[in-house]
Image (cartoon, rainbow, N blue to C red):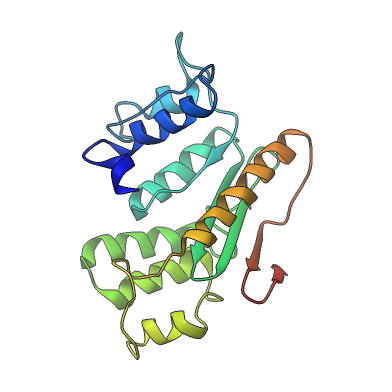
Length: 206
């Protein structure tokens, strides 16, 4: 909430929340974000931090999304991304640890994703180009119901973001990702992409 965040860096806010649950947890905060100067330490660790064994990618910036995927695949690390759009949770599971030849995202070539990211980065705030990038990254199944009406500008955007995000959907995303992390570490395998619609209780496996 605003009372939690105030003017604090949200990475520190999350660290404080984790410590309040378990004060013995080791948390390493990158309040400056990931950049060329710290990415090696982030992935590979050093004398004070362990190296990564699984990546949860929940970054907004398209260039960073691309970069994180490239680095995870290079190191053969599994990567999970959950997207919450309206009432739908869609999850990507990229098992680069099992197959280093997997694409950077499901169902499209690396070059298609790179081109979409570069085009969006050059376009500024163009809505059409933004949604073309989203289509390339996660597919087009989110284009339905109220989201489709918003995209076609047939209704007012109910939030400050282009794609409305509900707190309950974000909570469901977090719960699913937490389960996946634990199960993957235990040897379970999952589809490369699946979605859960909490409004209709529909589960779709791609």
